Amino acid sequence: MSFIDQSKFFVKAGDGGDGCVSFRREKYVPKGGPDGGDGGRGGNVIIKASRHLHSLVDFKYRSHFKGERGTHGKGSDMHGARGKSFTLEVPVGSIIKDAETGELLADFTEAGQEFIAAKGGRGGLGNPHFASATNRTPRTATKGKTGDERWLRIELKLIADVGLVGLPNAGKSSLLAMLSAANPKISDYPFTTLEPQLGVLQFKYHPPYIIADIPGLIAGAHEGVGLGHQFLKHIERTSVILHVVDISSDAYLDNFHVIETELRKYKQNLLDRIKIVVLNKTDLVDPEMVAEIADEFSLLGNETVPVSSLTGDGIDRLKQVLVTMLATIDNQDTSREDSANDD
Image 1 (cartoon, rainbow, N blue to C red):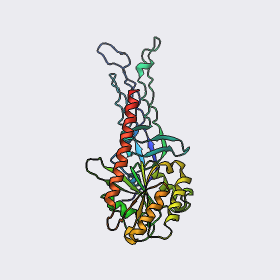
Image 2 (image 1 turned 90 degrees about the horizontal axis):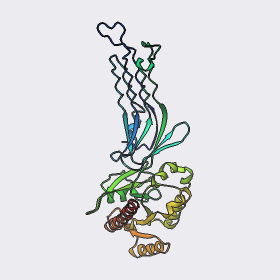
Image 3 (image 1 turned 120 degrees about the vertical axis):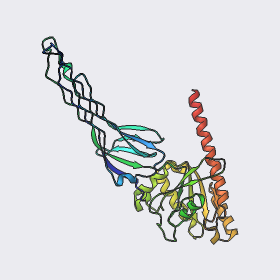
Image 4 (image 1 turned 60 degrees about the vertical axis):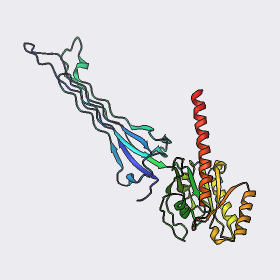
């Protein structure tokens, strides 16, 4: 199934039902008073964030979403029923913009958040509204109002707890498979991963954590080179960044700085994010050299964990370090929420 992270779609709320012209029919009363009911309001189009969705693939098959029209009013003061609203579910992390102006309309950061994308039209008025002292039998009613309609654009920024970054072929896909139950495509060729992959890290006595493998970045990614903008945006909301470095390459340090530079140029605050440098492919490097490289990165102020995503060496330690960091972040967030509630 394809991963789609942006799409354009059309929303049309239901039109309001028409008001009714009607008069009471009573025995011995040839001209009863007006009793035409009002039309029902049209249904809205509501966009709602869901934790059960992780891509916009549904927009590949459908791009028009409509609310139901309100029913017309009837005699005997019977008002029309309101049209049913249509609720469009999107993944948490979705951003809704006006397709023409680019105006940001909604930013879904939590499950359950809702946004009325198009409001249903008001129902028309029945003829009792037009009765007066001089006109007791009005034959006037109004049409229902047209519901809102517009083109919108949706963009998805994955909300993952952990983001994997690194140059193509650094071993991120293999690492994701080791850390989670994901089964990404893996090979020895650069750019094997052409779209973000998601996995779930399960650890005893801890909640599950979502890991996103961001496709291989290259120099110039912050300017859109290699689809950089499409990929970099998915790293913005992660709590922890795993920078995967292939230490079997002679240029491992230069490669590390390439990615750091791209992160800084895209969003300066990405460098302030909690980060672990994963020294991958230790199975291809002499153990003494691995220790020297780890010291080298530690001197740069980085938390480092040597692993082999091929043999599994170091994976358990990486999981433990990750879960400890994420649990600490969760506790800090909970403390801030409790403080805010106390205020």
